[in-house]
Every structure is written in C-alpha cells, then in structure tokens.
Image (cartoon, rainbow, N blue to C red; front, side):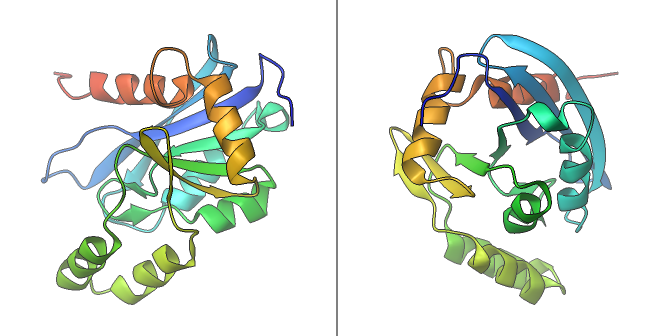
Length: 183
C-alpha cells in the first residue's frame, strides 16, 4: 500500500500531570505527512478515569475527520490508568489505530497495579486483554487495529521526521510537556 507524502494523520498523547491533579490533558496534533501541522486540540480527561476513549473520539471526529488516514496514540493509557479502547475507537471511526510505545508494556505489572489501586480493575484488565499484542518495530513497539502490521510500519516511516515515532505524536508530546511549568 503506497501512501502519499502528505497523508493526514493525528497523534494523541497526554500532558504530564502531578499526583494531586484530578484531571489530565490530552493533546491531539493533526498533520499532513511529517511536516505540516494543521491543528492542535486539547481535551481534559479524568485522571485514572474511563473517559479517554470518548475524548479521543471527540478530537478525531472534529473538522479534519474525513482527512485522517491513521490515529496514532502514545500507548493505550492516558492520565494514569485511563485506558483508551483502541478497538472501540477503530469501530466508531473505521480509521486504523496505531498505539506506539517506546518500550514493551509489561502487562503483568499493569494488571497487578490495576488490582492494587482500582476497584474497576476487572473492566480495565478485560479491555487490555482484548487488544492485539504489541509487536516490535525497529526500536519501538506498536499495537495496531484496522491495519496490517506491515502497513502500520510503512505509515510510521512515512510520518516521522528525525525521531523513531511519528511526528504528530512527537509534537503532541512536546506541546503537552509545555504545560508542565505553566504558572
């Protein structure tokens, strides 16, 4: 599958937060290819809550919706343990979803943390277990829905600039970090 250079993609990451925060911020960067930023959007999510899926859908279903060819997420957990349901996001948008992780997620560690700290852990664990297993690509790991692993790899190559992750994700990460020291 050949992708044109200015393929529309969106990258979603959360901003850093401190342990006293009730909410976290998610940042979505819509880009054409790896050079043109067309929009940056923000939504608040509940820290450790259950609303990241619906907030991600709101960001995606905005004015660039018809031009988005892939949704890149920084992993599947946002604002602590607010897990984005990548299956539901794909089913509701019919746009491939690719979760990108710097290192392989430790599912056992995640499950034990969920059991220890959250009463709603069965639902969250069930969701994590419904996702495809993360696969290594170069020096990152990816989980993809609605797209083959091979095509997901091609898309990552096409949408990154000088980093190992797609530029739309890198920008969302940078913008999110910018809120850290806001006075």
